[in-house]
Image: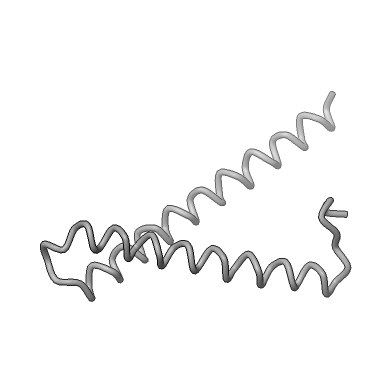
Length: 78
């Protein structure tokens, strides 16, 4: 029971910090997009933001997948 509690706590804390990091990146990217688009381009900004975030997510996902393959990690996270 004690080990399960620690494992669950570790998972929850790691997830919480991941969410905080995601929110920080959200603010940074939103500010960057706002800096380069004129005021009043709300819908365009939202689509550009979505494209930037999607491209970033794909890039990071592929890079992490390649790094995991290089060090011998499989899909199961062993």
